[in-house]
Length: 191
Length: 191
Image (tube, rainbow over all chains, first blue to last red):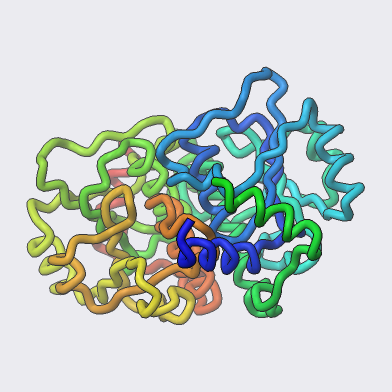
């Protein structure tokens, strides 16, 4: 471990946003999961969440650029458990949706504790998940194809959250409490 | 061809942005190319551009959601030809770059004729392409991994362009001249 690497790790950790996350419902394809975790890393997500009722350990590919090392992924057994866990931590859960009466994603405030719920590859969340979410958001689309790739939808919304959080100064000082910061730092230094 | 489908096609065509495009330099992977064309469709790109000096016809997969039918893709033999073509049409060409002194992508005006130059899978454009571009832009990243997936980078910038163009009213009336509009309409109605 060089001093430069330690500094880099601390610099990244000081910008981690413990109150911004994604909840992935049945996102199976390694290149989508990997691209989403890479976007999570870039905007400062500390821990992402996934539900995969078909079982199996999530797999990544080279699309992740190694980001799955730096974004924790917590796998829940089902969507109720996942949403219950997030709600207990104080998160508001926004489901990405395709219908036009869902709220425009740019009108939502992402500076509070926010979880983005993203559905399977066709960017649809289950009805069950939708009923449990706090709100539904959509990305304006003007094309013939009426949905986005799931990793694209995740990125577009995550970077809007980044824009708002930059403006609100949320990347300027550590957001993790000292105990958690120390615990994560020790874990990262071992990687 | 039902009347509803014809109306849908015309609705999409009225929002196409002939002065917004991407230039893809050596983006080979079908799922990346497909995801980029799907984002292009969603923000109204009429025609995308690609350079693939290794030869071969670009291939798409199910990630495109069929969008490669609705976004023309012009393949150029080399990067000079591609950039020369775009410049002749009045485009400003912005290369996506990784270094921190590149301009923040949110500070650039995308309401004028704009081409986003995106490099190979690791999101690097060649030095040659960079030297020919009008400017270099970067997406702020706060993670351990220092680049984004190319289709994610494309989407994040394209949706910033969409945001600006929505605000400028550029989706409110047809942007294609009547002759081109008619030509594209006839082609799309045959699909």
